[in-house]
Amino acid sequence: MASTVHFWNLRASLKSGNEARLTKLVKAAGKDLGLAPGDLTAVKIHFGEQGVTGFVRPLLLKPLISWLVGQGAKPFLTDASTLYVGRRGEAVSHHLVAAEHGFDPLVLGAPVIIADGVKGQHQEAVRIRGRHVKKAFIAGDIAAADALVSVNHVKGHEMAGFGGALKNLGMGCASKQGKMHQHITTGPALDPEKCVGCGSCALVCAAGALVLGEAGKAVLDMEKCVGCGMCFTACKTGALAIDWKTDIQAFLERMMEYAKAVLATKRGPCLHLNFVLSVVPDCDCMGFTDAAICPDIGVLASTDPVAVDQASVDLVNAAQPLWPSRLPKGLKPGDDKFLAVHPHVPEDMGLAYAEKIGLGSRKYKLTQI
Picture 1 (tube, helix red, strand yellow):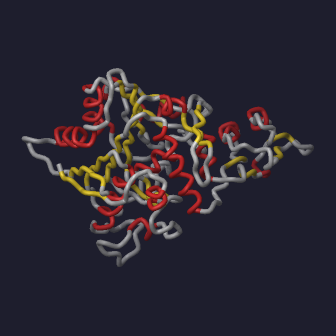
Picture 2 (tube, rainbow, N blue to C red):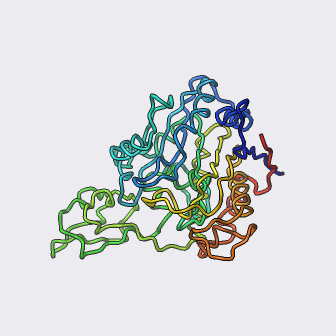
Picture 3 (cartoon, rainbow, N blue to C red):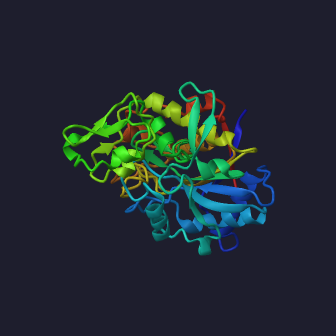
């Protein structure tokens, strides 16, 4: 059965401005959420790494937050810490980046809460029956929330090929350990040349996988590593970093299984908003925003994360390619822009597997508001 995806194509007028159109979109897509008064509602968003300009602008969230409050819910804006070294790797700097990018609770009407705690250790283990994942490690405050809305900036991604609702759920809602669980199976990569022998990694390694060796430098025992990711935050010299070498199909399947685990923590359907604006080649974690690969298209909303992602991909591919950009010359409307930029990714970018495990349908009916 085809799922309904509501779509605003960015047209507006004096009688029906941008805020009114967004409100109408949210009302149409969220009418079956079944929110109860007092429901603590996680609004999962990417606040943008320092140096990024393409993230979803804060004021675009006002209609959503106002609607949630009108339903009696108590929304909070949230994200989880990253594995890579940057300003979003722990909660203190992450909060400051969110503030610098305009996510002000007094303006938006919702506080910012980093869901996996100060150092990325606040998590909940969620058991599922996945091909790869039996226990998913989800950011604690996202798992604890009564309801969930994912707000997604549609863009390319250097590993997944495409980032939308499913990536924001699976990867974005995972704790550090959960992110590492999806990316790799062998543990972190250790560069002895960068190690100064400070011992910080050994102090935070509860599994005892990291110790200082006889040479006064860190030694990693892969068999003991549990993939918690704490060593990345502890290491200040870059000697410990994630080993990004992984099978892309298996990575995508693990990410989809994590998305299923996140949704399993909620009693009812969740709402997913895809902002197909500033569609850039890479993730908002990159520290810069490259030129867009197509014109701004609009905003899509659905309770089906597979359908809203498939519709977003289809609209981007149907759009006129833009240059200068990372797109190869000669691309035409209808050609796959994400695969043109990231040719290493499977053609369906994990959406077929997401449909297979019951996350939603790739068949959709696009309804314009």
